[in-house]
Image (tube, rainbow, N blue to C red):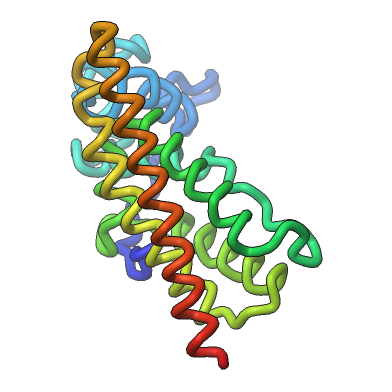
Length: 211
């Protein structure tokens, strides 16, 4: 993905009291995922946690930091399809499986796109996960780390951007009519055809460079 730089997020403050903490990073993330990034407010998250918004401020310094925390957790919980040992099935098939996972990820989490596509929005744990994935793909299919990085970045950038555009209307209005649902399905099919063509073109370019 095209997120190779980051600003480190401030660590959450921990309570020194003996009683169990009401506010934890995990609980904040759980609530935030339920609410959805576009609808996140300090008051809304605090109410769902059963605390005051001022109490939440003591753990997270700003609304931007709150959204970053939630976006990072969404990304960390995303199960990236595992590249098979020995490259079974081939790189093209794996990329098709991977891009399907990308699209489902974007569809399930409205508002997450800016945090996984912008370099300055990515956090160190997110970048580490991306790096491990690139290494795994490189090793599984016998390509270099730089080739794996370029291939995944090229395809992922397009998929995330396009999927965000396609699914934004659906997320705003989940109760689509039958005609709208049919139109949405047709749009998704055309999109996946485009993804397939992009994968073929990217692989052809990469193998020409190798040769």
